[in-house]
Amino acid sequence: MSTTWWDRIVLQVWDESQWLRNFRMRKGTFMELCDLLSPALKHQNTRMRAALTVQKRVALTLWKLATPDSYRSVANHFGVGKSTVGVAVMQVSNTIVELLLSKVATLGNVQVIVDGFAAMGFPNCGGAINRTHIPILGPDHQASQYIYCKGYFSMVLQALVDHKGRFTNINVGWLGKVHDARVFRNSGLFRRLQEGIYFPDQKITVGDVEMPIVILGDPAYPLMPWLMKPYTGALDISKELFNYRLSKCRMVVECAFGRLKGRWRSLLTRSDLSETNIPIVIAACFVLHNLCESKGETFMAGWEVEANRLAAAYAQLDTRAIRRAQQDALCIREALKTSFMTGQGTE
Image (cartoon, rainbow, N blue to C red; front, side):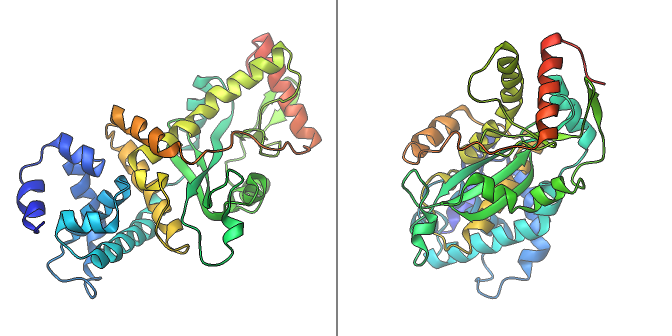
């Protein structure tokens, strides 16, 4: 296909729904993104023919990320060489991460987040955490380290989201075989939460216990004064109520991963990128997700169906081993459980 398809059809004829379907965003948002990236990308013309505009490079990158299409297929669409697509995808992804990650995937206004989770039923909460596995092709070395217990090669992706499902902290690049709790304990997020410097020092009193801003995790995570997770084992009514409140708020992270992969479907099939490039492209997808969410871009109904079909080949684990927890974390969780049960608020 010649380059006229992009110049004459896409840029001039396509309506908003065609832009949204193929690039996951309306034309206006696409042009804004190009403007943000343009200064940096203009300097990178060395390996590209000058004819390949910034807009075209960004477009073929979004097309590659939004579909499970091969490089050859994308190259044919845009009338360029296969290697050109590979170079463009990495240039654009790198630029997105370098220029926008620290601006777009950031904590923002903590009070707004805390109020948002409180409205959903959990007090003094600053985020929900989870991880997911991105399938990859078996690497040349250390291959066994990448085999996830579900039997495929993968890279682990840990993320914290706010009450609206926007990613506020990401950690990409761990091997699939590594346990979730270990990924978490070795992340910068864990260190900053442990040192009390990630969130403002804003405590509330629950019963007679002081509680800092917490994040919510599933049973794979360690119970900490700043991390609440569900009760497991035999549950009475009060524990079930606590778990219900927690899981209702934790759903935002599951939904965020669903939307991330529904928009950027390249994350659902085995990535043909090198191990060094995969984390960059995944991080770029996070930035693009937050950008689309903040711009109010429509998430089309069919995307989730298609994502579920692609994801079916790569099962994900729900929960994992439970670790022993600290005494004060237990006290906070008990106090919350009691306050939920008695209906007494927290102050």
